[in-house]
Every structure is written in C-alpha cells, then in structure tokens.
Length: 325
Image (cartoon, rainbow, N blue to C red; front, side):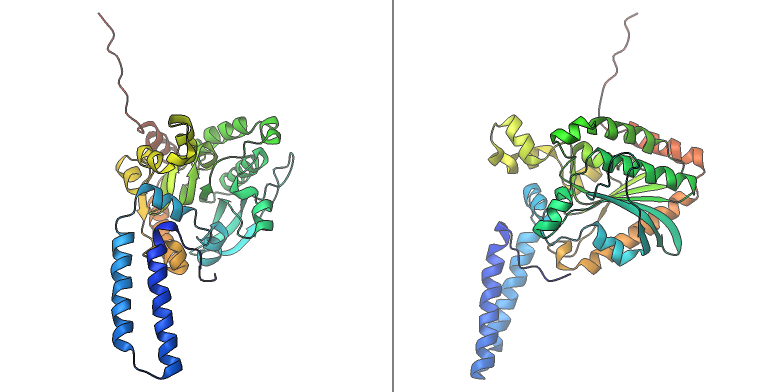
C-alpha cells in the first residue's frame, strides 16, 4: 500500500513540522552543510507532537481516523494474513453486491469462511463498491456463505467496515431491513465458531447484519455505533456540524465499548493509526484472531450457541418490575 499523503485537520501541525524537516534535509544535501543539530531538533519536535496528538485523541478524531482514505480495508487484511482466498459471488436471487464480499481462505493452515464489507479508494471503485454500503442482496449473499460455512464446518470470520446499509429506494424495495433481520436470527444460530472484527466504521444495522458472532473485536481507532455521529447530530441538535459532540455522547470509541461489554477485545494499532503501518496492524489482527479461534475450537455446537446467546443477551442495562402481590 502506498504511503499516505492525506492529512486530517488535527494532524496539520505535524505536516508543517515534517515539511520543515524535509526542507532542512534537502538544504543540507544541496549546500553540503552539516545541519544535523537542526534536523535532530525538528525530529524531536515531531515525536513530541505525535505523542501529544495521538495520546489524547477525542472520539470524533478517532472517527476521522476510522474513515481515513488510506486505512487498510478488508481485502488488504485478507491479502496480508490469509492464504488462497477464493471469492464467491452472488446471492442466487438478484445480484452480486460488491460492497459485501466473501469466500473461502486458509488461516494458519485451517480452512475458514470470510465475509467482509469492502470500500473503494479511487472514485470508480468507490462507486462500484457503493461506498461500502451493502444492499439486500449483499446480506443475502452473506447468509448464503454463512450457511455454507456451517455445512462444511468452517469457522466464520467477518470484517465490519460500513457507514451503514444502503438506504436507497431500490434497497428498500428489495427489503433491506428484512434481509438484515434474517441475518441477525440466522447468524445467532450458526453451529460454527464465529468472530467479527470492526476494522473501520461500524455503522448501525448495516454492521450488525454480519456481526452477531461469538466474539467481536475492534481496532482501537475504529468505531461501532447505532448511528453515525452526523446522523445523531442531525436528530438531536438539528445540525450535522455537531458531529463531534454526538461522537462523545454516543460512547462509540473502542475502549468504552470494551468496558461496556459490546466488544471483547480492542486490537492495538500502530501509532497514529493502521494506515501508518498496515503490516503491523495485520500482525496484531492475526494474533488476536488466532487466540480467539483457539478458544472457540474447544466448544461443541451447543456451547457455541449458548455462549453467543448469552453474549448478546447481557448487553445493555434494564430493570424488571416486581409484580405487586
């Protein structure tokens, strides 16, 4: 993957320092003057600025990192940690949704089934992938592959990375909400180990449509939420510009989600985000997947079902009224 040149708003101080560093190095080469002290001083400033910025990220800044255009996508991780990925196409009813991909692969020598939401980078691919927003046929393809995994006793691994399911007219006409609802039920009843990983955006039912699994993992700069910050801001503050306020109110950042039991593990990213070192992020993901698969392999079918049921039943806080005598 090529090195990113895209700079987020809160990273602009780093860009200026990096530009100064590059200019000094170029000047040193052109004039043959030793500027090592000045270069060392700026390098120290850059490291201090990185620590200051990336050690105190707000929820909204983490959302921005989750949406970074150079952040590794599902196919990037699949290429780095799996072998022999064979993509399978179509829902056998309507179409092949390119926003949701899937197929068989080998992980640590073991055959697995992969289902993933895939975004695009260049304009043409973004349109082809529908900006990572699956339609009903995508979720029906996911269900077809999940049932295939169950038939052949393959562990299921899903990659979540979507702002939400596509809300267009055609999607609604083909019953996107029904397709997601069926997936919630059927994924809950799969008799194979299942793990989902939030690698970027985890938006609403669009994410949950492939996320009812035994374990839910999340990268530290990803988010998982019932609604996007902009959508929440538009509803509560009548202004999408209040997205940063909404991001804090939604408690959508990885550490909070882990403390609430919504996710089972937060996977550490390279300093500044996975896009700064995709291979290091992939190795961290490989380790976590292997660890959780090893844990789940020892469970029989009924134990898998029971553990998955208990996992989702315990989410949230509620009171049960005591009946009056």
